[in-house]
Image (cartoon, rainbow, N blue to C red; front, side):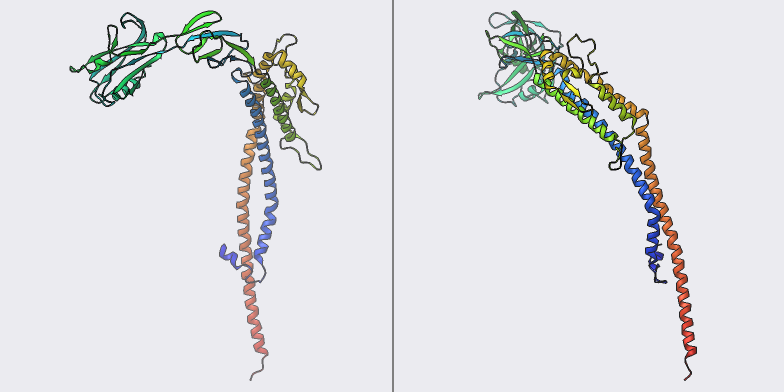
Length: 475
């Protein structure tokens, strides 16, 4: 076709190629315009629904992040974080009582030190070391008694492959028994140091079973009657006084003394009273309410813009008439007056409207700061409960998000738009093919015309020459 197209206009002298282009363009333009308009409408609807869903998600996740782990509820605060810190755990109760504690000693772990060897590469001997955890009671002359715990013993085997002080250290650490081994060079030699977990019940003994007559491992024994290693520190519990009651704990991280609170003991401070007080983040609650209001207003404005009708000067919104958006708008308008906490006592906030969130006639939301401050001061836990319930399972915002997804799915909006998008793409491709064929037909027709015109001109030229010859007198 390219060769034929290149001959257009040669015989007649007329720009028939331009004529073909114009005819094809005139045929294709209205169809292209209609498909482009249809495609733009579908894409605008898909984009509009995506914007609405993103707005709902932003509202939901933003508030969830604010209320997670009771972040806006009463939080425990220590009066002396150098002695003990306090952190609320997930599911902490809304009501916390003031607690006073005194840290008399921290929990500690047992530490054993072996005799010097030349260096970390020195041989330690072949055989098996066995570690058993339990409780040690000090005796006379450095001796002790031992009561094994319920945990199974841990065995370490030393062979020719790991028969060095460093190999013994690595084998102990690899066993993950709760005992940590290190090698310290004190300038005169290298020593194996063993450290156990904190708590009196986490003491441990070490026994040796030499292999092949090699008694080198005997230097690492720590048993009643034969304590070859030196005890540098004992395993002991933390000692505290909580609200006048003396208690002990095997760890410096304590989670069972104050409901919903984890204490971390930092140092002993006998005679120093540390108070753990519940403190509420009132400013954080106010900020959360303001941000919620602003986000709701923005979502209302978005849905209004996308669903507005058109007029002589303004185009209609991409989602005008969409039932899923209408349902969402209705749900958002009723949100401030909806009872979030059923059965609340008289005078206790139970709705967003009780927190000072006001809905104007045009759907915009604002915060009555005086009403918000009063609610937060008088009922901070109730305000927190309302904000938390909004995004909880079955809560109003969770229901709104679920209902929107269901509405979009039920009305077939998503599926219909996807099908329409595919139909437009198919129609566009079909039009391109049809116009290619149409152009080819026109080119063929005009090429035939050019050939006929060229033949006619050749005949005309021949006749003109003959007539001229007839009219020329003979010499």
